Image (tube, rainbow, N blue to C red; front, side, top):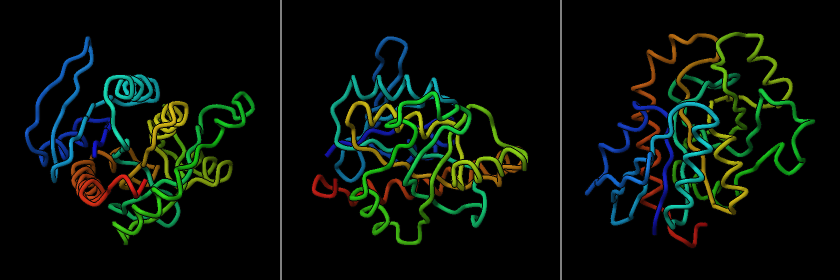
Amino acid sequence: MKIAMIIACKAEFNAIINKLEKVRVIKKGSFVFYEAFYKKKKIFLIQSGIGKTSASFCCQKLIDTFKFDLLLNIGSCAGFKGFDIGDVLLIDKCYFWDFKQIFMPEEFSQISVDKKILNFAQNVLQDVKITSLATGDDFVEDKDTKNKIMNDYNAFACDMEGMAISQVCFKNKTKFLLIKCVSDNGEDAQMFNDNIKYVSEKVASSALKIIEKVSRKDL
């Protein structure tokens, strides 16, 4: 069983890589990958950096370079109505909130996570919450943008990479799962800075539970 992971920022990446075994660096041109093990499962990781373009580029390179069974995108997110700091979220649907849907082919305007994988993850994590995710290249830190995302997309969390990664996986017919942890309420950038280390550790722990339990039959 082989797992790939794409993680945006340094704090999120360090929280997971420090818990893995037999870590080694694999350089492919300008890309730096990491190979590691956890509970006898091989894991390929890359830190993409923040934003849709970097996430898409790194995700495609990860898919082209390694063979694996499941791709995980883990990290922080803003959580809106009904969520508290530190809540772990499983994403069921993704959207781009900063790109007009009328310009997108219908099949890419919304991407859903496979229900079998989602149900498996929910059974493993148990106290996790499920929600839709809106992705954009702007950091959401004001009420107007937050309310627009909720009203236009019925999404109650947002990040800067999730939908882009989902789109690449969908095009490549790659099985994927997004696990996020709420770092802020979408109204205050300082809240993100204050909580990023805490939520990075929490989402890393959730990802490791999934990695430990998952098998090919769960996909």
